[in-house]
Image 1 (cartoon, protein in one colour):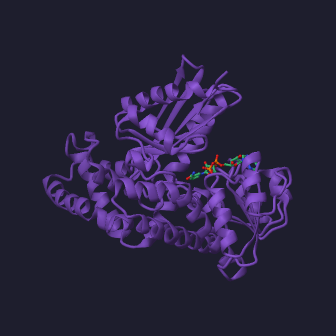
Image 2: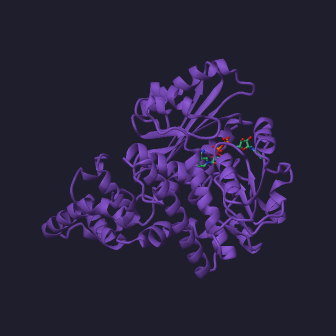
Length: 448
Ligand code: NAD
């Protein structure tokens, strides 16, 4: 049934990740799939999605795509985490009584990975679930409830980033970041869409929403008086900004042809069904805020609060400022290079070299990184120590790309440097030390 392994250019090969774990849960008939896309910048980190899928191949494909998105999501703001994602595929009509046992067994799988993969909630899981998973997994679980010592639901932080993204696209398209009076359609009123709808309503936007859950529809339609749009026609509703906050793949050749919005900015991961959809949007004159920037808020804030010691206020400020600043940079560069915003951020090396490094200071670190690579090749054993995270980050900067492409530039430097001798070794050693010490200074979100 699974045809992911066959043929060059198949999904597994195109994925380019590090490890894929596929585990049947024999007690329930569920599947646990953990995709570790990259640990170059730190432990692979990403949410746990729990839902029903038509077949195992769809589960694996979802995990592969989502994990790659997480690599970009963390790398772009310079956070010390890699990309990963877990998907738990449950059978239809999965009995709630079996849920805690399944989550505990999943937690044991995470514990076996011993820090290689860290997780938090995603569609179908909650901070309460993280408490159950965390009881078995140990310290590798983010977003537990406040009672269990965690930072709780990431949704409101993600919503904050989405609101900043909506402001950024409005500023670019209409010359004003204010949403006052703007017609905005939010697809999905869940953990992210809900606070986005409330934030937009409070800011005076002409907001409407679509939802497939009856109870959420009642809450927002009758409870808050927000106009409802039938889910079947929501994507084609006439509006200024469309905000996808449901599931991925909603922007495809068919739906893009019917869009009647000026811009798209939402949290849903993998909003574009395929890369060509970025060009389709551009040809239609619709500005697209890449999802891994617009939807970064939860990942950024929670990892900042729980792992980097940020305060809640600091996390909120960082998220809003990062999303706004980065989107404007992406829009400027895409315009200057006459490409779609999606194509710009998908170019090999483009993200790290052209966008992150532009935040300042990347040049010196890259220079030192080249020398660090020389050392990796000259000093036996250095590259085998996975705890040398600063060095690994320098390595990642050497090829200007967060993706695990094997540091080709570094290998190149290493090949040419072998035989240069003792002098290179010592000078390289000093510069390597400088790079490791200076590294945090050049990662904007670890300065404080
Ligand atoms: P959620 O499950 O809480 O909410 C999604 C909502 O969309 C649900 O209420 C669901 O009923 C609704 N929905 C599903 N299909 C729909 C359709 N066709 N039309 C209208 N509504 C529909 O999920 P969430 O946590 O709010 O996340 C939303 C999206 O954002 C997901 O793609 C998720 O991966 C992504 N995301 C979430 C976070 C986060 O912090 N929660 C962070 C980054 C990205």
